[in-house]
Length: 87
Image 1 (cartoon, rainbow, N blue to C red):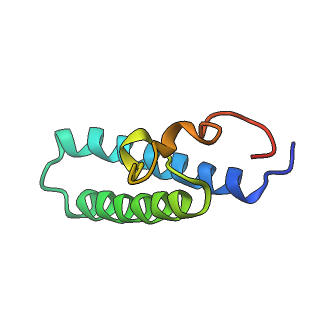
Image 2: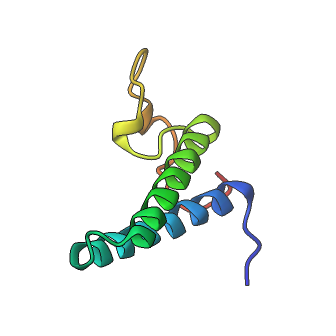
């Protein structure tokens, strides 16, 4: 198994929380008043937002929507998040 660099580890954690959120949404669609389900959703949503903020600060915008775009369109200035390599 290949060794992941810090950027890849951070991306993996974002993906894990995204998956957990998708599953929570599906569960809450059929159990809308489940307190544990709602807490699970809130926990993973907050964690994903924190991780995305960290990614944006360290490596540039994770999505086009997270690009500041104040002086230049940053989204296209670096390799895209899904591109592999040393980035």
